[in-house]
Length: 206
Image 1: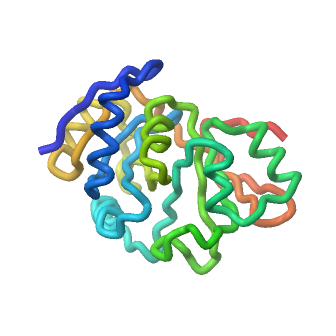
Image 2 (image 1 turned 60 degrees about the horizontal axis):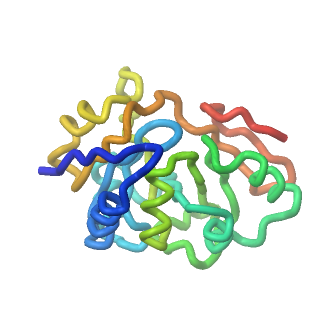
């Protein structure tokens, strides 16, 4: 059974973050807060953990549109092809923030994730807990919202209820306070003009 680990959102304790990083290094699956809805994820380089996340979500890996969380711009640029000047400005204006940017993937992106389009969704959320976890892990973590597509329910925002539902499926649920119930805004930056694929919490600054 997974643990419910309380971490202070403004000032996450190094010890708690270290505990989560150990779980990720061991191939664990975690549920964590972001600046939008609670997410589920694992180390993107651990194939078995990635397959487990897909299984929990009831998705085939080939068709899954998973995104990654990076901790800053230099980290993000390792996983994308060089970003055109106008798109780079757009990212700089809006990140960290409640956005997922779809960009052409670099060769550092594990084969598991490369869809036919060779693109990758990348997030830098405005949330100290998950940013610290990714920084200490040194690798991006996969992110998918904990939301069943066929559920009529809103996104679950209460970490205790999330733990109740997922405690037998994941290794740790991080309680970083109530989550938001609106997902990120998804912006496709694979052609010249950025295209909003899904309007979510983020209002895109152009």
